[in-house]
Image 1 (cartoon, rainbow, N blue to C red):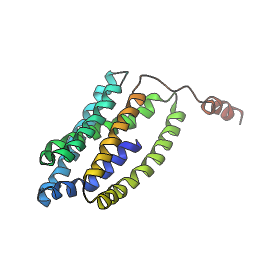
Image 2 (cartoon, helix red, strand yellow):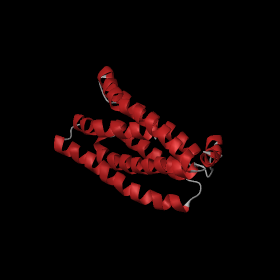
Image 3 (cartoon, rainbow, N blue to C red):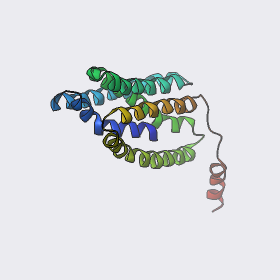
Length: 189
């Protein structure tokens, strides 16, 4: 969840600037962000339907991450293709968000474990995500262009794909000791 959120927050903060710096008008750059959001909405509606039919969701997780990586690489190598790149990033990002949210409930042995996983993923994930736009902007300023920060996003989404291979497996976590003891403590109280 942290890598997906870092990529998303960084993208919505900087995509219009990247597109504008490559020659698009401010209005056209804003439309790229709109396209990214709409395509993300589309995939976030379709992917849960697909995920429900699959016990092993690695292909979905890796595909979403690779769509994002391809979009970022396209912005780096062919910025004139920003519309296609924005759509790819949106589709991949929407898919990855839905999967990141679903995996905690699907992989947990019980509600207590799902709550613990959710709390950890959201607190650590969003803390990591909060620094993304700042680091991306700093990398742009230090490097004097978008090559280094976009290269970072490509690398980040490739790492995210590796995590997707693990998280998308058709496994459940073993029931935690705390969750097994909790009902007995409640009954004896």
